[in-house]
Amino acid sequence: MGPKIWQDPCSAPIAEKNISFLIDHQCPQCGAPAELRETDRFFRCPFCKVRSYLMEHRFFRYVLPHKAPANKELLYFPYWRFKGMLFSCLPGGIQNRFLDISRQAVDTPLFPVSVGLRSQAMKLRFVSPETEGWFFRATLPFDQMLQTFLDQLNKNLPRPLLHQAHIGESLSMLYAPFYVERTVVDAILNRPVPGGNEAFDLSEFSGGPADWRIRFLPALCPNCGWDMDGRRDALVLHCRNCESMWRATKQGMTRIKVASMPDPGNEKHIYLPFWRIQAEVHGLSLTTYTDLVKAANLPKVPQPKWDRMPFYFWGPAFKVRPRSFLRLTRQVTLCQPQERLKADIPKGEKHPVNLPLSESTETLKLNLANFLKPKQRVVDRIGNIRIHPKRFLLAYLPFSERHHDLVQTDFNIAVNRNQLALAGNL
Image (cartoon, rainbow, N blue to C red; front, side):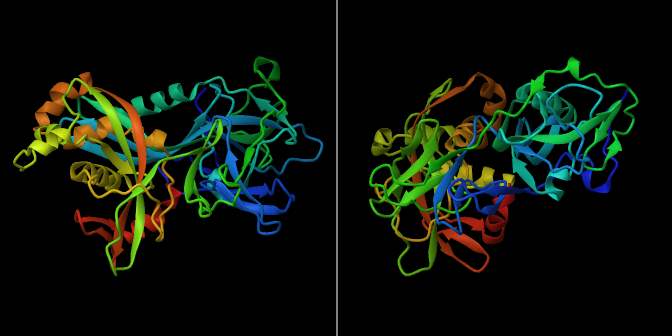
């Protein structure tokens, strides 16, 4: 039997979309209703004003709303949902594309292969122990699901495939509602799953009631107890009282080191965040600025002081389209803006940090492949190069506001303003 396909027009399977979904939510302090976007992490209740930070256990879990009759026992079938940028390093350069896919987390022909557009057309809810129903246990690991999808996708790429990385990924699990009337019935449409003529036996699957709960961290500065600030999608929060910045980890809020460049004077500007990462590179000499000049074949005359300047990988700490992400990663890494950095938090407007450090570390080999010259060295050596991140810094660089772009005037780097505004869905 072939895979089931959703029949209603708002739920066709998709391989590439750029739409975030909405989530019905309640304030953990006062219970007031709220509506969140998929990318929201920092929550400020409009009623009780309490500030919280949302933490997931491995990934967020959501349920789609159902319209099943009241006497039906609901079954929730799991789907992996992946959204992010895919970069493929090939002999002719680096290809990129944006992916937004959902696939079964239990391999079975009895349920549709994807939730399609339903996650964007309906408001979701977080799964909690109060969510009634029977939840299938996911038996297909995410890495296996993604690799199967990529194997199909990569058939159309030229060979050899030198390196591949998925960056800025948003991983979650969506539970779609069903119930059984001899066969499986879609609990949203109250219609049998197309082609589902086989009798359904729940005993063939493992699962049970929901036992997951969202963790809420108080958005209070661990250093001074003051309320911390941030935009809705911020992964790093700012305490304006003691001038410190914090990111959420499994251990709670952890303080991070921050630096910034001086502002460009009387021009209106905004600070964009970048991750600066120091790493050990095995298989290539790349520890100083002199090494970078040689590796990237930069048209510069080596100077003795460059041997004492450490090399750092740089990358955006904010979301942007794949092509711009790759360009910014290369440009800022080649500029190595370190001599003018000061260990302080800038006073001006700051763009939120919404690309985690863990994702930036995934870009290191991609970054290297993008600036290494000549390109034949990429083909010959990239497979044997190993990169291990050691230390990191959050660095803010000032960008002057122009009509269509934000421009870093010291290094002549531009970011399209509209593209930056629309990147929230990535």
